Image (spheres, rainbow, N blue to C red):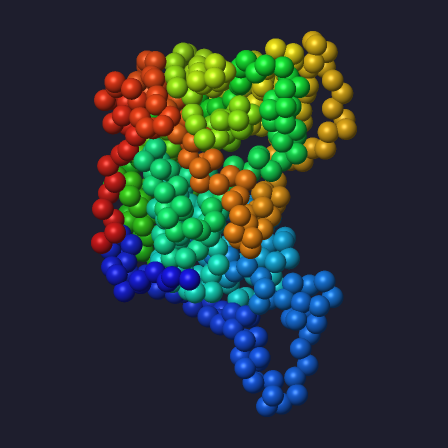
Length: 453
């Protein structure tokens, strides 16, 4: 693997170092086993436990995938718990710019692993320089997803990136191009592609069981363009919270503890597509999949007070249905018993609606029994993670590979821009640009702060 040059100026121009950890070690189990194989065992009799050699159904430590974490908050903790439930994965290191989150993450990992091997870092590049790290999960805020993923790929790591995977269309294009150039495995954290009831709904749409597809419905948060600066508070010491690194390429603003506690959401500088991608990265992605449109996007986007109507070149419509409030009541168009992130696919012969908690099929105007359809919680990330780690081993594309991620994100961004500008937009999916609309095209990228030193 290619290691990243850590002799360069630290990210955002501020030094960082490996934190000492009780019982931590830079030596991996695979290195220890390699040393034993080289002759350490010859010097004196050694009894090696069966689990170390991978016997009795266990995975040998030398064969485990060493995972590094970039950004550990509530979502990452959930993902990581699922990942560490897999026998062939171990968490070797955690990077976070907040000391409290680093330490809480290590305590959680150590408890699950039954050891204290996990090492902490403040600067992600120091962790990425480790040759024993095979893959990373990127679960920072939106502003870091693209750049952390690119750094990881260029350092020789495979990447599981939480969504949304970028702040702009240019971000996700650059990310997809980097993964293609480096040849590393990438998985977007749009885990509903790995959930049974969503897979069933898509199969019904693609197979013709619903007849000719007419309209796809995706639930999304009501967009918002927040740009309110919270009152300035004293900036903590970098070891406590590295505010410069927390901001990353986002525009500078004074520190406020509420931002790092999660109040960055709803702020345009920190969030993707005026908040529309929070759910759109999942639900628009499902609709893209149902329409067999993973390699393209809609060509028209028209906003209204209740949602955004999009049209594909094949005539299928996509309606992005606004929720009334980000975490409150839903649009009355949805069956609230089916759970979060619902989508609906309507064809000439029937429809299917599906959410995190269930699925409802209507054929010929009659609701079909769905008790036999196996269902899993839509927020369960383990099956999706399993797909990623299997592909790390096989080097085959993941279920949400860079091209899939890029096109579903671009579709969501284009819809958000039509809402921001308040007018109908036409889009060229091949050139990935808006037609005869310089203002819309200017939104495809944002100025980025030079925080690289």
